[in-house]
Amino acid sequence: METTPRRAAVAGYVAWLLAVVLLLVGRYTALPVLPGTEAGVVAGTAVFAVVGAAQLGRAGLRRLRRSRRP
Image (cartoon, rainbow, N blue to C red; front, side, top):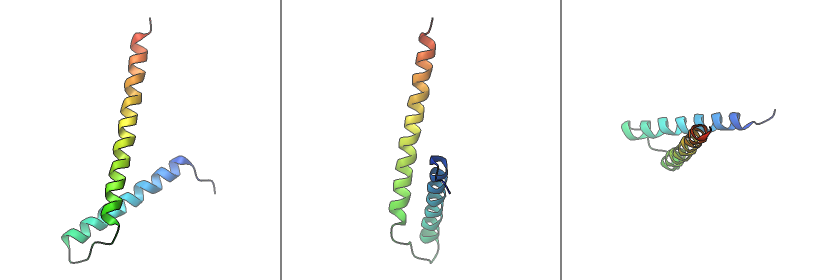
């Protein structure tokens, strides 16, 4: 089966959601926080911030290019 970028992104998102749930369970119940959970949540959040900033930048550049056309 071929791994596409979209499939990899969805898998990463699901893994990040699972890490968030595990972190919340570990913080607010008697179950322990698993090692690496906090780092996974922080890393996923950083990736989302970078991807979001890139998308905003691309959209802004497209608007600038369209507005300068005669």
